[in-house]
Length: 118
Image (tube, rainbow, N blue to C red; front, side, top):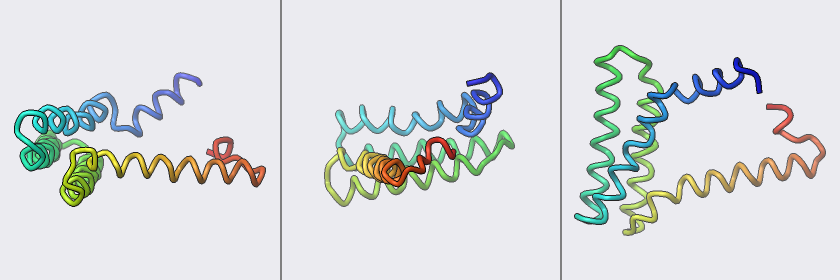
């Protein structure tokens, strides 16, 4: 990859701050679940995601990644709540990765690999 391609990928992820902001809810969820339980962990992860959104609005940065992140944390928290297990928080990401893997595998089988297209 060239420097421009690497920079473009990093920019698409929201830069270094985007990478940090995307990991904060998980970094809060896991230890709080260990000490205080699932309900507290769900609220803490949602609170951190909301805090990131507010911070991005105050800093007048791009808020679209923060909104997407908040919605993603909301979906993951909902799944964890419905399953009653902290492992449910990670199911959405696992199933999304499996779906992508299936699509990419099918594209290879049809001799038109999406990896090359992208």
